[in-house]
Amino acid sequence: MATCKECKSFFVFEDNPEKGDCVQRVVDPRQAYYKAKPVAADQDASQCASFQKK
Image (spheres, rainbow, N blue to C red):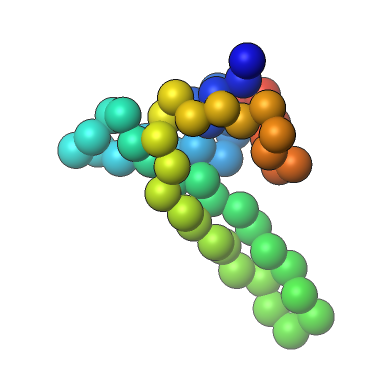
């Protein structure tokens, strides 16, 4: 089972190593930006379409 902490897009919070942000780069016709959502480090990432092994 793959977990979020094994993904290149996961960035751990300094004050809480059990959680972090899943950061995705989004490009649309006018601009590029980043989306971040908080996730648990041990959350199952096997169904995540953007999972990339570190």
